[in-house]
Structures are given as C-alpha cells and as structure tokens.
Length: 283
Image 1 (tube, rainbow, N blue to C red):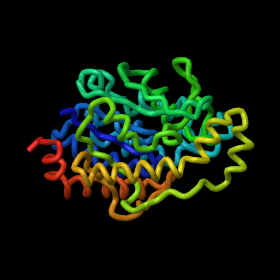
Image 2: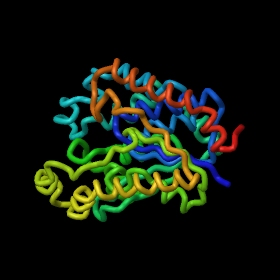
Image 3: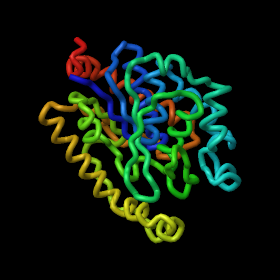
Image 4: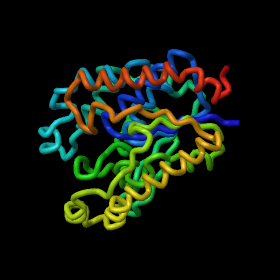
C-alpha cells in the first residue's frame, strides 16, 4: 500500500505546510510519494531533500528584499516573485537546495501546473534537480497577472491551483491509497466565485480556456474539498488543516507572521504526530 502527501498551495499560507513538514522530517516520518501544488510544491521539495527550516528561513530573510517579491520586480520583470532571484539565485547560491539528497531519496515527487492553452492540469514527476526542477516549481507557483507564462518542455504554464488545487484524486489514480492531505485553510472553508473576472478576461484574453478555468475554479476547489472530506470519513485520507484562519495572506512581507504561521504548522503536527504515524502505519 503506497502512502503519500498531498500539499495544497496558498502562497505564504504555505508556511503552515512547511511547519508540518519540518516536524515530519525531524521525526523520521516518510512516505512513498508527494504531490504539491504551487507553494505546496515549492516548500514540499525540502521535505524530500531533508532540509528542515529552509522554506521559512529564506522567506523571512528576503521578506522585504525587492529582489525577491516586490512591486518593483513585477513592474520590471512581469513577475511578483522574481523569476531569477527567487527561484534560482536563492537555491543555487544563497540558501542552497540539496539536489543530491533530493535525488537520492527514493520518495517520488510530483507537482501540478496549468496549461494556459487548454486550461487543464499538467502533472509532472520531478526526476531531475537543478534548473529544470526550479523552473517547474516556478511554473506550478506562477499566479496569473502576477507572473509571466512559464515555457518549459513544450508547455506554456501557470499556477497549478487554477486547474487542480488539491490533487488527491490524481494521486489515488497512481496507486497512492493512504494519503495525508495538508490544507492551508481551516476545515469548513469554502471558496467563492472570483472577483474581478472582467479584468482576468481582459488581460488573459489570449487564453480563453485559462479564463474559463479561473471562472470555474471555486466550483472545482469546493468539489475537491467535499471529496477529501468523504475520503477522510472512509479512512482513506487524513486531513491536516489549521484550526482557524492563518494570520497571513497569500502575499506578505511580514517575517513575524511567517514565523507565526510556520509555528502553527509545527504545533499542529506535534499534536497529531501519533495519529499521522498510525495512519501511515509507521507505529
């Protein structure tokens, strides 16, 4: 029976996920495979490489650095999170990502991005490290309007959360039968129709299928929440979610809020540690 982790996105709300994963790493709790979306993909890769604290460390260090995430970056490059500095310079030179450990770990690592031409999800297994990995992570995390389209391996891609925010069904289709799903919104949360769709239609008019996916995202997301809730009742997945709305939004330059959100994730994992072990049959 294959065990897995399914990691929702949510940009800086993903600090909660990073906190949970750091505790799992410290406690030696592993799974057969991980699938991450957007921030879930970016922060989850540190779980496979075994780098405790890395996600919260570099995000707090560069919280107010315009080279990392800023209006300046967006105006000068088209990317709120700077494509070169945030996804390459940090990983290659400053807080170095351990590609050797990532590749040596037998755990499978998958992510989700959205094809802007079809509006459909693209599922990619990460079988290499380095620049190729970092570009796929960027693709999975590139929010519409706030980012330019990422072109890689013949695809034109943006944020995976547009088309498959919580890809439990997909992971189950690969044979992952026991999955821990980490959410960045509290249980009971429901997404509402996106405001400002007129602006999306105007600015993304070259990609009508992407616009349609954005229009229907709230329905897809709520349907996925219903599905994971039912799977949890059936004992087929375990949901880890905040007890209350997190003290941070999708975008933040407040390092204290990042640390606080990360600590909430850690505490949640510590409280539910034995439950997680038992569910994954790692007693």
